[in-house]
Image 1: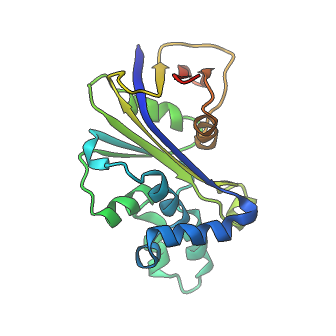
Image 2: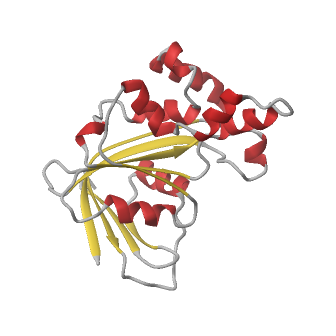
Length: 222
């Protein structure tokens, strides 16, 4: 079954590892000192890429992450043997996208948070491209930690993305298609970071994903 939608809006943001502290300080200024106190690096990045996007106008909000709030998780584990209740709460809820919605006091209809690695993007495509005529907001990202990153348990880059999808072609900047029935032995693994890089570079192409299915991405201005 071939599923397809038009990309109407795209925003990406990443922090340079060598300048992350300064760039996070700039993000805190953009968000505001008081709300930023309870937001993760990922939450602040999502705040930036969701600027000007009314999440309540979409039938579904799909959120993809592999490691979620890595910084809060590190600080919670470092607080032992007297574990911090605040760090525990922050490490598990709310996630980055929810932090933005809470700060905006934004109500939405359907929120679909997806976490994983190898099949994360395929799962997101199954939800984002349902042939039900709904407009969809898909956002996601990761945040770089310290020792969790060194242990391979967190991303080595802080980034976020947001794209909006609609069934009609007017004013579209690209087309996203997902053939769930296609199968090939020549596959390319696309995780959350790989997906971000494709979006950031506006790279067109076709990729056969492990486990089956072919992802197609086309940009109309190329």
